[in-house]
Image 1 (cartoon, rainbow, N blue to C red):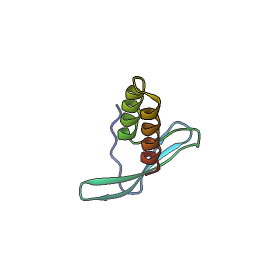
Image 2 (cartoon, rainbow, N blue to C red):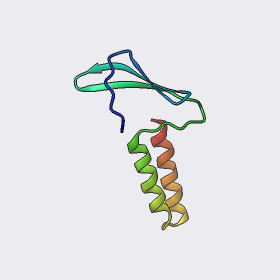
Image 3 (cartoon, rainbow, N blue to C red):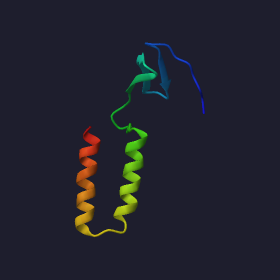
Image 4 (cartoon, rainbow, N blue to C red):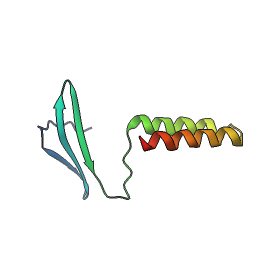
Length: 79
């Protein structure tokens, strides 16, 4: 793992098309912006964890439960 220190307004560049920018620092929180090519998915870790959990759950569920999980995930990803 590479650990970097950045100040407000500074960037980190990953590969040829991903830029991570420090937008705001306040109250022990850092707000970052991520610019990436459209074909590169960018998700919060908790969203990935939910998707994995639902995929595992869906592998042993019936059709109606699967539809319910898919609907919940669509709602979660929008926000």
